[in-house]
Length: 174
Length: 315
Image 1 (cartoon, rainbow over the protein chains, first blue to last red):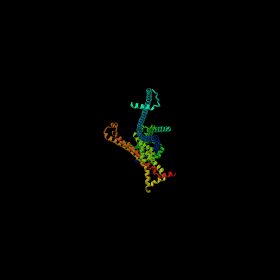
Image 2: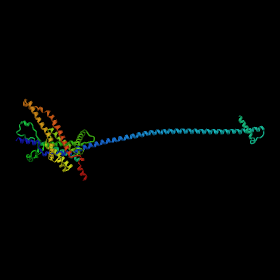
Image 3: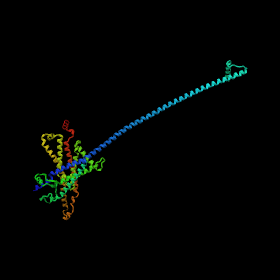
Image 4: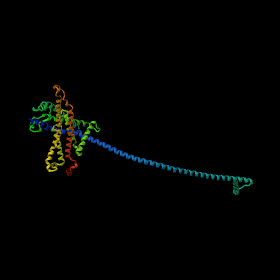
């Protein structure tokens, strides 16, 4: 009797109930399907998609940073070359301006010289003309005076030599 | 999407109805439950360790199963089953609540849940390998069922589900089934049978025994830890009651019946932290880890399956 009681209690405690096992399997199956559908799958996909997004962001930022760095280098290079070029242009302009200045000055000088020369020539011409005029007038006057003195018509052609000599004398004498 | 929601609600409703109905039945039948044997004296009545109580049974089947030792067929619904349903219900409600608002910018709850899921993911990956991550939901389900099934005993309304060998044996048999299925799937039936004679032919009986012992040891480890914790708690309660009687025994009986058993306050709680919380967690972890190791052993990484690969390329 004692042993029977022990066996009964032992079976109560350690016995395997097939119905409970069935329920355990059912519960496990339902839980597995529902937890997978409701929690594990969406959570894992969310975690991985977020991870992917962050990774993408980082790689994007990295590539953009590299691009900006590259562009910065390019611009700096361009800027320095532009500076050089502008300096060159300035120098060139300066040089050309100097050349042009010289040219203009030279031109002006030459022009002035020419003008002066022409003016001198003209003056000389005028002078000669005036001298000739005076000579003519003087010769006429001399002829007039002489004819009045000798009361004889002096022919200009006949006495040209005489008159010239006279004027020459006067001129040198004056 | 809508069908899923309706299905979840239906399952929750059904489980609630089932649990409420079962509790009603339990209350109704609690008077005529297990009768203590007449031989046991008053001292033995102090210590009562019992298995799952029967709520619903089929008398005809109960008579048959009386002749089979350690196997019950007639007791359809026991308190253990109620615990299992309650655990499932709690988990399903939690999962439904979580799945309602999974966002890219997580809230506080989602951060914690995600941390836990990530921990599980890393555990499965480290134990079974990257190629076996498909088992992660099952491992998570098993772990949650196990730990909640143990902890639900602390409510004192439901007994621990894992205190019943039927439950742990069912889970262990699932593990063994998975191991066998994956072995046959990955290596072929002949190769699997040949694996029993592996080091030398003489070892074959040993290998068969160890194969059978695997689910039994898995089941009894978990069951024994939880049930043993319960037995120890009951013993300690009884011992503390005895100590109370020993020290305050000189007081008049009228006063003694009014006073609480002072020693039963506080001390069992400390032990409960070890036997219920810590042990429950450790056993759930051990069960899941062993399942992972066994199943992972049956599913080697794809590059270690030359035969299968060759077959695939041929066909």
